[in-house]
Length: 575
Image 1 (cartoon, rainbow, N blue to C red):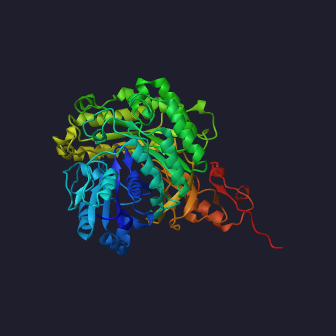
Image 2: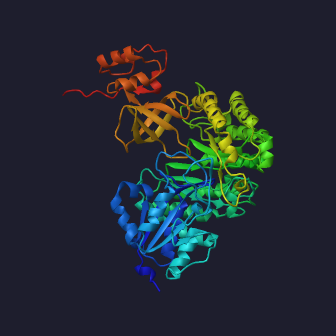
Image 3: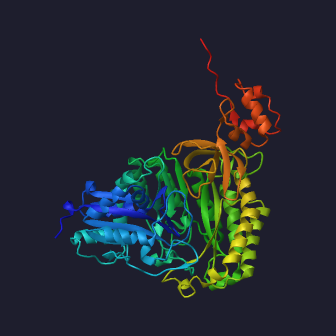
């Protein structure tokens, strides 16, 4: 019998992306935190638990020694929705096999990887369940498997689901593991679970495989935030749920009182938090219970931080596809939900919430508090050429009628065993790949670009943009939060810095920004010419005639309000 106090354990985070759970950096999912808590609860000392991300192993080969020498290796990962990632690269199947081959101790694999593995992490793919050469695969909850495996002396475990009492205990006990994440403390956002499971049964989705919704009481989530705050976390997202509005209720109807306890409690224990966002909100909930939903949305907008996004799973505006895939919301219902969220939460800091939704020249230059985002999924059963046009027309209507969407997520289906899509697989998605590509480009050009300009007009200030990489002579960065805007800043600035930026131009899904406020006495030519109304000649004149006591001294006749972007730092005077 292996004594838990003598065990050395290595946790490797290969990252997760599920319909209601995200864990690619700068996010840290619940899996490594809960697993660490279960280990501690089973008797393993904290100091004998090591945590690595898959990127950490790639970047520093010496870290593989921890995989080799551990008595117990735990791999956590799995992608059940496709995506493109900036902050990290999810583990590919061959890398996961290498972990199993390297481990000399007992190896355990868990997380959404249990639902299946494809040849790569991409859309329009089919998957199958594989053990990837691990000794054990947790077919239930990996944290429950870890607890039982340690208790058994590494002999085995029953595949079971953990209960609310266990997860609440493990969530707080495992908070310490965040200190070992390479992004800790400044550029790390913790994904928080309020519930899992779903009351609905869409054909493609893995979330119903967790069963009907089961909610963690507000004090347990608040206690987890309190523990994470003690370890330096200041950024949080309530992302681990199918529908935030249904929190604390019967799984379908809203419960505003539970939301008030949850959000109010988080703000009480973490008064200095810098990000409080959410992810999923079911549009059918808003349509079926509009008044209770309006109240819940107002509560969220009162407590959250700006730039928040409520992902709506429309998936398809085509009634044929809706019928064949058991989708629970029609295009008309989804449009009504978009309208309600805009009316209740589409206001910006510094203005009256009654004025929502606001955009244009008179709107404050901050992102709205909460806007809907639309998920569209292609390759579903019944898809036809008309499907693409119906989806585009839905998005066009939202724009034409004066509402805002924070982002439009267009992707192709991944088929998993246990879902209704497993029989169809990727056949339709592959047949329609050329059509999909043309349609996606058209949406980007005709909808995404003007919508982004409405949401974040020139002069919009984006605080705390973390600079992540260089490309084509620019520095790119993002805020922490749900679906943050990618910001391109002229010039190659030092990576890892955090700056405030003002939006000056728009792409399809990204913006160009300049440091805010931009100092006329120090700005580069590239930064100056990025500002609307300033061309090469004006920028050259600004540089030649520096320094200035004030912006007015520059006498810039641009026809544009430059005070949104520039200032002049006080000049140092000789004694």
